[in-house]
Amino acid sequence: MKKKKLKTTARKTPAARKATSAARPASKVALKGTVLRSKPLAAELRHIPWSSVEVEALNPLLGRHFVVGQNVMLARVLLKKGCIVPEHSHHNEQLTYVLEGALKFWIDGKEIVVNAGEVLTIPPNMPHRAEALADTVDLDIFNPPRADWINRTDAYLR
Image (cartoon, rainbow, N blue to C red; front, top):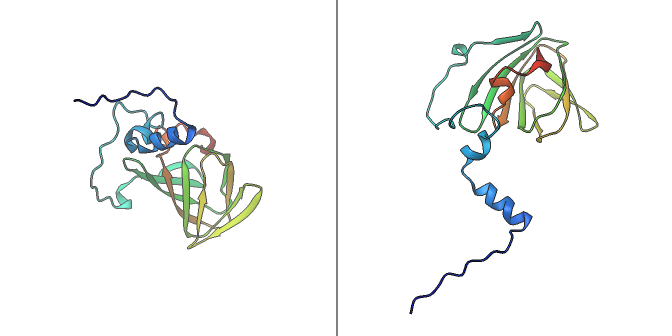
């Protein structure tokens, strides 16, 4: 005697929907609506010297260059003392690691100074702004990659 599979029509709870969406392949979730491409980037092994990635001058006090992977972006940001990054927010999670200099952030009602050797984690959709307290070099990591940076539609920095 064959067993019949029962088809259920019960709706998923919000937690179950979240778990299901988290289980989707990252390429479909991370890049959907984030990067304008006909298909997601394929994961590939690359070795890239920073010196081979052109620095984009956004304004006289701010430059950057970045490398984009399948689900993450690494940017090297160069800020002259006094450079202001205006308040903004984005759906991307951000990690900022200051290599040289110092950045003062205004975020979540606090002023936070991030010095060389320190890291700041910024959750998605949290408004923040920053000022370079000295000539500064930092690494910013974003997940998913910043579409506005890739497509150069980040007018707030220019």
